[in-house]
Length: 240
Length: 221
Image 1 (cartoon, rainbow over the protein chains, first blue to last red):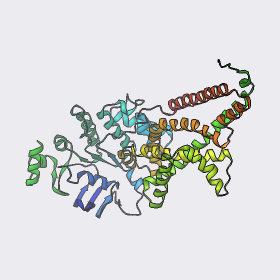
Image 2: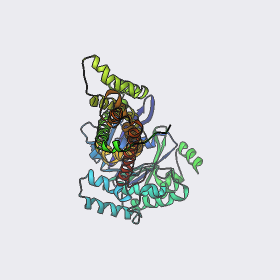
Image 3: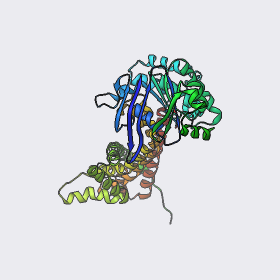
């Protein structure tokens, strides 16, 4: 379970998160929508401690993420993350990309790491790309590689930061399809997304972010189809 | 009047020339290795913005890149000599070359580090890698590819620049050639052969470096 409790976060004078609270129980998929600069992505970065927080608390599996005593490298093994920009390691093959962290972070044997990597790559439909270098692949394939690379660490949670925003429109589908598959398998996910259809159909709940706070949160279909908050209504009418 | 070439004397002295060539290669390789180590430290100092270190690094780089190599060799040999520090010609040339290599390579390394997108760091972090693992497996291998050719150029440059050793009486290829030609008056012959030897050395270095790069860098950037 991920529990975000009244989190405030500023970059200099700019307060990006102004008291955000969100509980995500295991097995749930939460989509976070909202305008750019509303703090959606920052929340994900705070959850896996890439960014620090100014006040409040974030618990992941009851571990206080931002406590000094927490081993953050270890914590991040439980939190898979995929970013907006494709960031495959360009000097490694697809298989090496996915096997690297299991091998050096989890200290698995080479064979063991390769086996897990292969399984996860097949899982996302890259079974025929093991020996290809990522720069030779489409954006959609690179994002699926990023998903497989995160899954190879056997995370309990996946944090997805606008993973389809940098993709050509015709490649969005294959990535969303992969995420849908994960959701069906019961992976706990927080997806920051601009894909309203995906948010409505795949997630259990949708949270609408506005200027650093969650303005509305509720059952996915209800928030997208019949938003209660005026701000949400305005936002959705603009993106549709 | 026609110049008569006499090559025999040059061939007789070939062992001495080859020995000189070996010293040239020796001092350049050493200057490169030491230069790389110092340049990594200077690049880190410059990027960390820790005031005193950053200042030292900046002064080093500015002097090394904006003054003639000749001046630096003279400073190491005659300049330090004036303070009672007497370096042998070999050590004087070596230190000057190390000084210059480190200066140039600092900027190369810094550029290399800064050319790696920050998303590579966040991606590595998010997989649970420590900083050391991130540098070891993700950042450095990519950086090495990007700076490999500038580094090779610096190496070739330092081989050619070691010929300034002639001015402080070092017995590298140029110094040896100078000594042999003045004893035999076959100036043209000796310097032609020396030039060919420099050419061969640098071509071999370039060839070796491209072979090595193909082995090291199988992926693409």
